[in-house]
Image: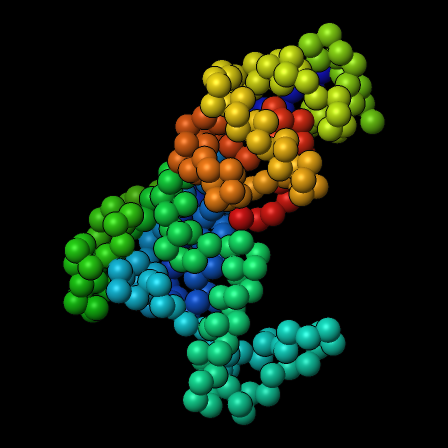
Length: 172
Length: 104
């Protein structure tokens, strides 16, 4: 008997709602990767940007997210001897954030992981929906004109709760 | 390894029904695989499937939707239109290559 994969049968109505609350470069990728994977599996996927996560969708900031190694004890030197930690004392030194950001970006590029804007383009192209948080928009004094074009609307917390009925929620 | 008869040919498949031998693939088989999962093959579908196979032959790894876009030239959006819901898996299934390993 021939086995036929059931690509369409698991129409379970599964829905994923990811709340993106961080704007550090290393903290925006988990949401992007998971959202992209979920869409590729046919899962309805929404991203809600709030607080520092707003930097992911502010036009003038989204291409310049930074990675600070300060306070991150999991950062190790990218060398063969895998377990050498970067000393915390050097993290706040001038230039460290820039250097760490560049290293992270180079690593992502080498793995063909797209920059934030391209990644969001891909997510929107795959049917992902992007929502901005009203309170964060007010705090940052921005409106739709300042936001990445893929954002559908600025919505408040109640709207978000209403829209995510039955969804699996992920707070990053 | 299980065997299956597809388009009149005995071929090796895994437990999900994916072809496991690259060289056992043929257009007749691909056409039947596409019918199995309700994909109607247009010229553009064939072009993409053949590119996916070429790329696999070269890289030894199945292209992700990302790579199909950046290297192959089919925007993600179009991939979702051509192979709805689960483009990566559907493309791989029809092309007779493994599901992509990469996350992005």
